[in-house]
Length: 326
Image (cartoon, rainbow, N blue to C red; front, side, top):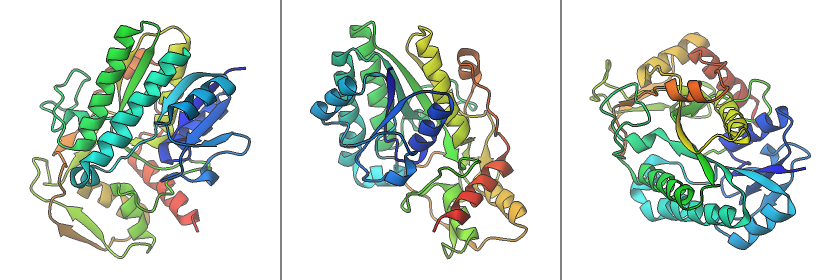
């Protein structure tokens, strides 16, 4: 029986996708170098192959020996501020490594490819909600590294008609598996919800709110937050779409509604019933004012309907997971 290879499957989003695939009855193999992932995030019974997605010999062996017929590619570096200070790392880990992986898949005849992209490709979009044809003007090397990879996949699909990449552009991913099977483990992750939850639990002394002069209703950045379980299920739906013969496509993954930093903090304080210890700080490099998904295409294309759009639910699952971590 064929299996799905999940690169970065020991990480935050990747591990949720592994559970979603297992829940859907699919066989899964994980490839992860564990540089930011955790072996314990991989469910019992799922093979974990430790290695680099840029190592073509390792990837080729896995594709053949594990009878892989589809790849979900999550492996990569994801910090916007770090990409500004260390761009070479992002072009190496995201763009170059993805090219090596995709070429190996094409050569092995593995033609179903689902890529973890980002709304950062839009930069500061002219229109919100932003459809997929919004002009691409990334603010950061992180956004550029993902956009370059999208173009590589597009070009490969043109040159090799059988190769069909689905590129999923994530908006802000947050929350944790409602059953507490997995969640955000990386202590260096710097998403707003994770940092706010750590502050709420006393794991962080103070929550910094970066910038107060953005072109939004309260001066703080505005984002479309998607629950990680809904996002994982979108990947399973994308695989079903490819199984049915669907062509390569680009799809936004978000809800179509935005919350500012202050609104997220206020929502968490309401859940907690108390105020967080917080302070204002200067802008971070690479942060656009706002981006919100236009989810029209993804809902029309995939058999996917989000189940966890409520911001309070997203925050509660993040709290439950973080509180359970040692």
